[in-house]
Image 1 (cartoon, rainbow, N blue to C red):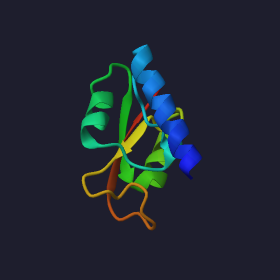
Image 2: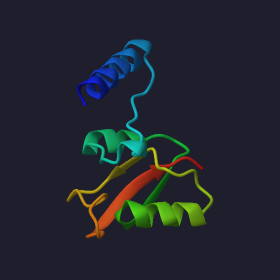
Image 3: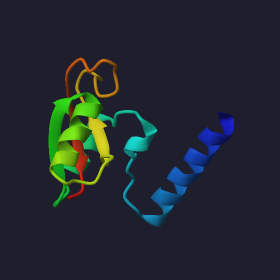
Length: 95
């Protein structure tokens, strides 16, 4: 666990130093903080999908032919990765 945290911190530091946009990928299975999610919303060319939990959002995205997993997931109540889905989850996808 400690090694994984160190690698994450190292990668984050390298991204910041390189000027690359910092994106937490959905593979992390956690929601983005609201300001980070809103940064994705502001990016041109990305698609916002809303559904019941991350599973519902991913299913909608697949039906639309979008790339899954999402670049980021967010909900005001923290519902995206709860099982069973308890409410709306918002996610940003690449077309």
